[in-house]
Image 1 (tube, rainbow, N blue to C red):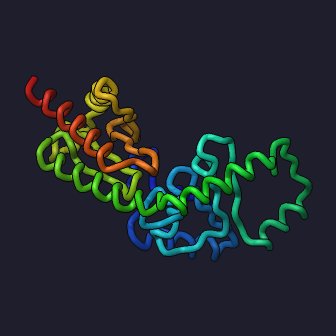
Image 2 (image 1 turned 60 degrees about the horizontal axis):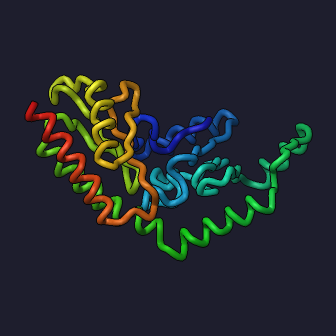
Image 3 (image 1 turned 90 degrees about the vertical axis):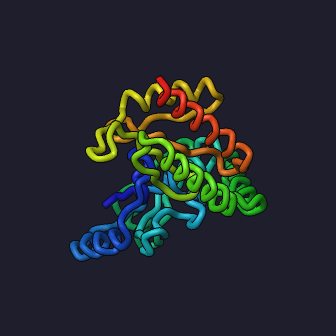
Length: 227
């Protein structure tokens, strides 16, 4: 069973506490393996946790990671126990043309060094927490914001047309993203109804940049309410 630990494409929605403990138990009782998909939320992006699966307090059998691992260099990894890895050899050989590239290995090790030396996970925790708090403040001022999801520097602002019915504001979300682009901020709509602003900035984002974005979003939402 593969599980994304935060519903990234839904806008950073966290799983209910304790959810995976029950799911993992059911899967393993039937002889299955559990896989944590950390492609979007791993490597310290959540701030409080290096791996997203830690938020649920469970240990998967396999972790998959890419993207952030190479910071632009094509690089990914499968992390697992030795007994599981040895099973692959029993089932036949695996071939990868680019696997084990020395260049990619150096890049991957350098990324880990920078994460540690520059305190980027802590930055995700503190600056991400500040960003979420400011987005929640905007929620109190703009009725179009139905919820603020996520943790650290993986956040989602859900836009709705009505706070009672929670009708998705899909068209509005697309327009707001275009208006934010003119303000100098890159945000994309995501979620099943494309009504959630996906906010996933670099881990080294500063408080000043957060303020720039929040003020731009406030201006865009305020101008729409006056139309």
